[in-house]
Image (tube, rainbow, N blue to C red; front, side, top):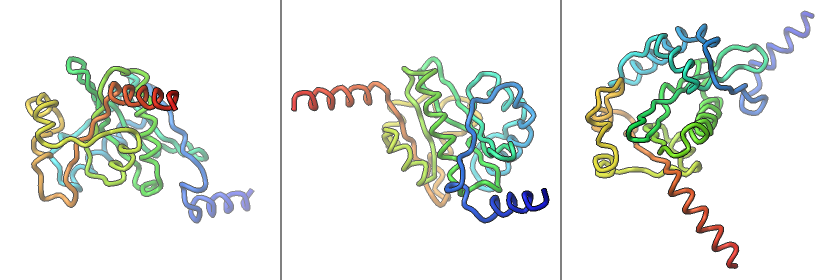
Length: 213
């Protein structure tokens, strides 16, 4: 028994997460509210460390997102410990959706957990909001790279003013105007949008060309 414990310790501490196992990824529900306080704390700590103008999220906000069925959780496949979280923000009138509150527990960062979360959230968006455009607002080169692979396109500031004026005028927990103009960060914020209609048209055109050939 003792030897088994040492083996698990060695496995968890000396093998890179991304090459040893995949996290368990699933949609969160009310039963996961036990993680809300810790998730909210990690999100708020991360925001302060990055120095961005985003309002604090409380446990009640996280639980509300879980109850809506619009959140994704990542768990350690051996210990059951929560590894990461992300959720959706919905603009029903404008038919836009965006991922928000993407956070990975400190001990599991730099292991690819965020990519698993983002990919699963992207699939959730397409299932529940198939006719909505999906926004992604990020400073991360890694996230930008994943977005491009998924079919997102970068928007200029002029595009944002033209297509997303409600973001700059709305009283939101995220001050998008401030973030867009925040030049002191190591990486500037980039707005990207996935348009299901454009992707569908591109796929249809490619299919027509393939059949013609």
